[in-house]
Length: 78
Image (cartoon, rainbow, N blue to C red; front, side):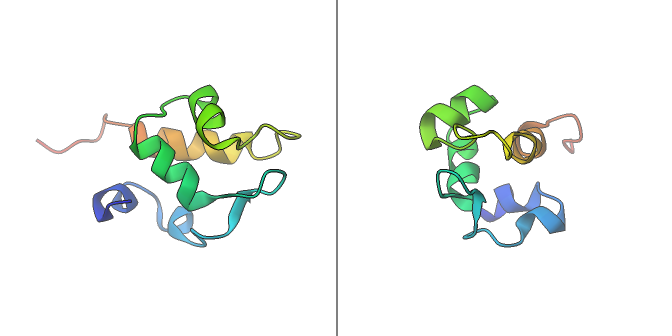
């Protein structure tokens, strides 16, 4: 995970990177961010790479938020 990637996230989402975001499958926030950084740009793609949200799905909203923050290019500086 690059510092540039972390800078795209709101401060609150930069916390607890090594804690499980997906409790059902014990997937850390860092692993999810790494998957997004390596090209998983949809919830389904992240799920296939990490198994996050494959349990009861309670983390889908959080995973989707990470995807939204890390793949948004609308505020890119020129």
